Image 1 (cartoon, rainbow, N blue to C red):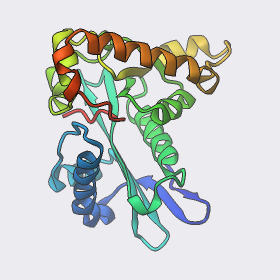
Image 2 (image 1 turned 60 degrees about the horizontal axis):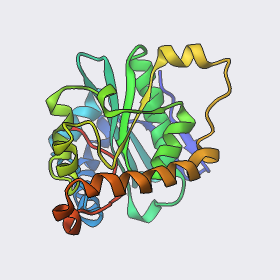
Image 3 (image 1 turned 30 degrees about the horizontal axis):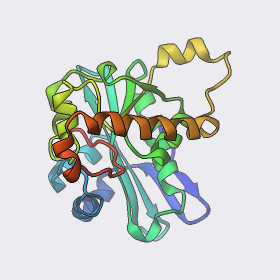
Length: 236
């Protein structure tokens, strides 16, 4: 059982339930507004879909002690439970930069490990902040070929400004970096020194600059309209 967590005597982070159904419409609206502001291809979700996740016990919600919505995240499975993605991470604009996103991600990770203990947990992002959070949880960078081959998984990329790169490289390369937590590999590496992403982040930044130059050079005519938003994939 995933226990609720009280953060700084201000917020409660917990598995969503029927008491949170009233928040579904607000969450969907904020997801859409955030996607517009960031210029990303986040897959749209309906309030009904969000409610279903809540009732299935596959969502994490953060609220103030008074019940005001603070943040949200849900989990999805792919290839019959072989992969799990923590999707739809969104934080109320009034509570951003409070560290609550890290707590929500950690609770979603705990929920994923509890419900699907043998599944590989995946993510795809260009955000260094998200990569740091994932790294602290045990994720490692992987090639895109190690992510699900399910077409539905990649549908969420179709409205992204950088989808052209993903398409013309046959899903081998993109500005996003795939990340994966493999429970079996993690067991083997428990005795080894954990990769320190904070220490290596400067190296990653240099690699990202090089990758952008190479990938964007593949189709120069697209360069003027390709954006570089920070995004975390929300698989459809």
